[in-house]
Amino acid sequence: MNAIKSLLFIFLSLSVFDTQAMAISSLMLTNPDGQAGVFTLDNTDKITYFLKTSVSKVEIIDNKIIKTPYTRENLDSWEIATKPSKLVIEPNMVKEIQVESICGAKCGTDRDRVYQINIQPVSYSTDGKEQSKIDMLFGFSPYYIVPAKESKIKYHLDYKGEIITAKNSGNTLINIVIDQCEKDAAKKSAKALCKANFTILAGRTRDVHVPKELQRGELNLMVLNHDETFREEITLPRGE
Picture 1 (cartoon, rainbow, N blue to C red):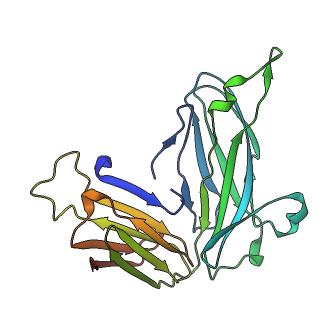
Picture 2: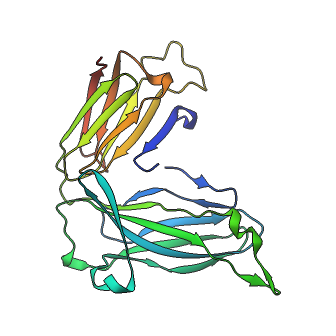
Picture 3: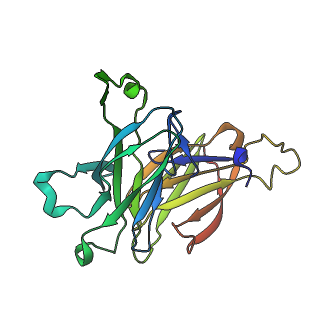
């Protein structure tokens, strides 16, 4: 796939994402197989970074995203853990953060479980001098999703003006892909944008702006679940 032709919209925002000093493998990782998920960090800077991780559970309540940080006070309710929780990445080194399930059979499987993994730099001193460049690295907050065991897809899409209103009332996330590439084949160039996608969490209703290059009287869409075992192609007409 031509990367220039693909634009990713996610509810919070896969390739590599870079802060000039540090790159992360994904900002949204789905892990359905029960084994540890892995985020890969690549230090492309010339200094050593000290990082710490923390976890928040994410829930959708009345269409609002509610985040509950994991703390010592709610330790008994933790469902996942990161390993290591602290790490040092030297220049030009690559390291992994594993995300492990620790709740066993206590975790529900009838609905997606969603978490935010916060990866933040911490200041430190070398030779009595505090590392000042730490302020330039603003960290990452990728999402980690354990999909429902059985996908039950239920959604509604409405296209008006420049906006698609997407309502996901199923039990798992949906990926919605706008694909106008075939329609634009006669006039497309290497730099033309003809495809975009975005993700809607279970229980969420969200307005998504359609890029100007893709706006048409009707849109060709694909609706997918996390592993594409559900795949539906539709044509969505634009309303007034």
